[in-house]
Length: 504
Image 1 (cartoon, rainbow, N blue to C red):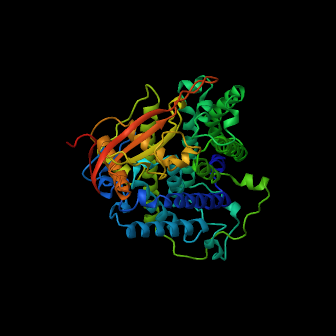
Image 2: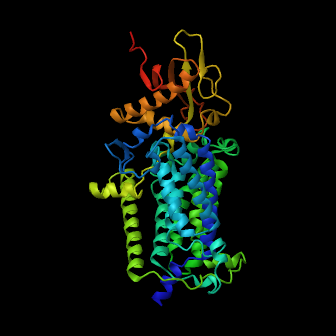
Image 3: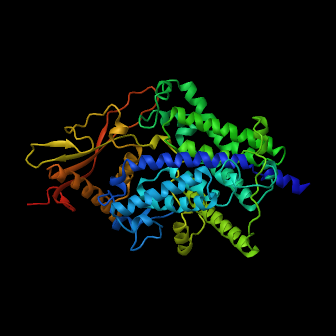
């Protein structure tokens, strides 16, 4: 009886895992294409952070960035800053992710994709955001779950086997996956402890930020009754729906209900809030846990053959070693995530994090502090960037991003004018970082990057400006933009900058 309960509780369906693989592959490829549009700025020899500087950046569990002689972060992209090397890695990443999406050598493709995606993310850790977390998580679990068993090129080579509905046996990997997504998605609700959520205005402050809202989100900002309702639905939905994934009674029914409702909630987020590919990858991570009951409801029959023809079976010690490695990675990830949560929740105890284990967690990317739980939405940043380049004689003054005359006026589509959400997030995080050597070095790198662009246009000084749009309580006028200067430099030559006014 207990065995049947456990089997039902942690059973996965190969069709759900295949759908997760296809969706994740598509959105990761989409993200790669978007990154390619900023290839020279992020990866090329004249990137905003040089390869030498990127080798020294290291992240700590609590959103702290440090400079070390040699970072524990794994990145093939920092071996060389040449355009040829970076282009080769990009091409390999496209091939690996495409192979993963279509299900060719699926587990190997997932592993190679994970290594290359981790490497790409570590090229500039200040540019990351939550969608990057989801892409790594999907690929990590895909290395262990049978995501290529159906609807894949691999499955076309299978000639004998049993129906996909027999894939309902629980494994260490399946159990860890279901437990993980239950914990991971419920945290989003349990950590909403800021005053904005308690006042029923958490969703209001999200949607009222112009760079966060979509065309459909703007019209509902003044409808407070609806925003209060969405606030409660978000808070309780994120906290309680993942609990349905683990109900021991009629688990397949309640897991289906929980996942479908959570997916609907994420779709609504995307309709009203510009979450880029965060919601999409969150959805595909959830879809992998849909049980066979769901496919019965939608009347999608399982493929007839799902088991590969006779092949060499891995020795017991190899299977045990793989399971042990997986368990260690999950413990590392849970430990790292606990550090993050304990930082967000007042009074929660923070367990010790020995330095060797922290280094190992960084190396395998089990520790990543770039989570967005929206603890306090009043503090979300909103605004645009103006990288100004000008000549000392005052004859020329340009916006280096657009090539147009310098102006602080808000562009019509200021997110696009700023280079996209990643750029704004990157600049603001550097601006808001605590004063010290790390911040100064990052600002120097940014100023150096813009000086090179200015010198190419015959300009000899730069000023990087952040125009922040402050928020306002409901039904109150919004204050005007606030000018914040990240850096001001005179450019002596390519790669050489000094503070403006330091020259005699």
